[in-house]
Length: 416
Image (cartoon, rainbow, N blue to C red):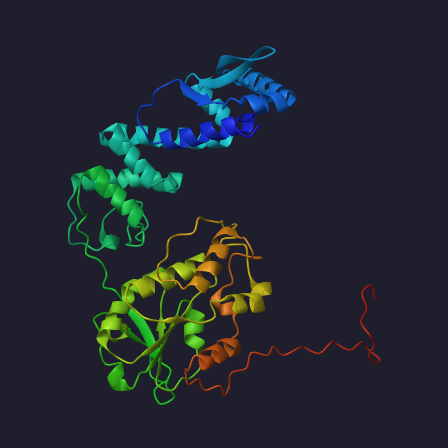
């Protein structure tokens, strides 16, 4: 029965079609789903299974209000088989796809209707905006409408995003990190750009060289070119602030706070790190062992920084897997995802990245950078040629002594 669809296959096909129609203003009904008729050999060899499947489709279609088309095949006697399942209208399709998918479909259509009613936009444009903001919460979607109403009336070009006088909004709601919602507002208002004055990029870094490591952290808002002239030859880019602050001394070393996905945007403020600068600088990137960590690594390389990854390999994963997590900082499950095309990764990195996206071959989807001991990281950097000073690096946890019972000591056993 390789060619003939089951009830589950038909329902899955309707879900796929409804997802594609979710953002289309108009849809043509009925929707016909071909069942896929068995060939003669299959019909002869699996006649009982074919009949059972055919009857299951008929019962299912009757229960969901779907129409059917038939064809007749002859095998001694005529055999009447379902050739198509007909979904007559949207209401029938929503019954077929199930409560959860139907609720999502209705919500997206309702959102588009609100955009048309309150902003006067055309249905196709409304659907495009809804698709762009699919993952926004209900609260944020309402705020999106209110913000669009504001920008349709007022020109705030030249203001910082946090200075836009949106009543009842968080000052951070329009920050550059929320690019999707800003692009949606521009789309709904017919603007190429909101014209907001962005806060200058910042790149935070500190010296690791023992002769300079007591110097305060520095923050560049304009290109800083003095690194090589200060004797910097080794640079470690860290994703996590705790790790950034506790990196050990490295002769001729500098540590850069990458700040996650902001790394590729802030690193141009240190132009001597880039390939075309011609400087003999050894750069290492150290990020979380998760999908995002590898995506950031690829972006940094694609931006033009030649760097080695450190503690972002299978060996490190296996050595620290007990410290991994399946949860976000908000206590929600980390979701699997479809791997992206990341041209900046090596084959080995790509293999681990795909596992951390899909969950195949790994116990957990994330081992955070700060879970890797500094002693371990320092040894890795040393093996890469970084002149790390290991004195004072101690990652051995002191063990508290077991309290003694009054009158002497005794062994501690479960159940005592």
